[in-house]
Image (cartoon, rainbow, N blue to C red; front, side):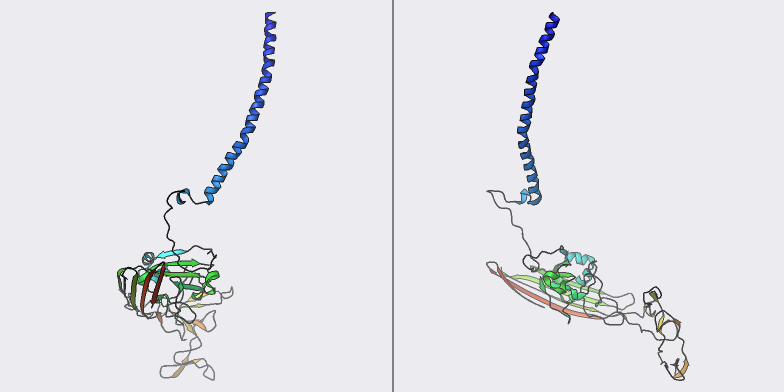
Length: 368
């Protein structure tokens, strides 16, 4: 009986404990439900804080509430833009020291080392016997100098050629502080002459001191001698005025093709570029329809040439190529040796005076 009574009491105790467990489970669920909105609120606050951190400046850059404002940051505007217009491409800035490292010869020579500027026929390019420009013109992406806008301190530079292009040899190189380049998308702001991009030459308006340059050189063959002389000076006048100026002189003799091994090679590219007539570069080419002494084109002596004292002699046309009228070897004429580089002489002077009238009003006068 004691064992049975003990089991009955144990069963009653379990029966009494089950409602307590149910109440405890229900209470736990209610507590979980009560905590759910609080957890969601905390999670929402964390997400909002993350979004705020992603789009707002760092807390260190914001002025503290009730305290001193953060120090102001100087913003330099290097060129005028239409209100609301945003450039699609970043500005590439090349300092004067970087340009000197690329090429100590001159600022144009340093810019020519950058891959964004394509080789263009200029006073520094090899001559092919045809038209040779006397200036140095920038060409972005190979679209031509007429599609590259050159600015001086954010203003259009004075054109030096009939098509409106600017010879950068005429800019005051000793006062250049940096060159900023914008490639592509600038025509919406500057016009059709900036389809390829814009090159903005920034001068050092606060230059104080003296700067001079003297360079010289000659080629291995004794030609192409060059001399460059330059001087720049800047100083303050009182507390509100500043004046700076520069003068430069450059001279280069022509580089002649004759002394070089390839000077008389008469190299030409023949062919039309098709599968039947592919392009080919050949040396010792001749025009097989003309002779230096004279060529007879018709009559009983057609196909002969005049030689020596004016007597007639057979004419050797040489080996005919894919291009009509062009042969390799023979008695035909060829282009006389020309200058690989033409002669060049430039003189440049620039002066600038600026004055601070106070109240945030300044004025300047410059010329060159």
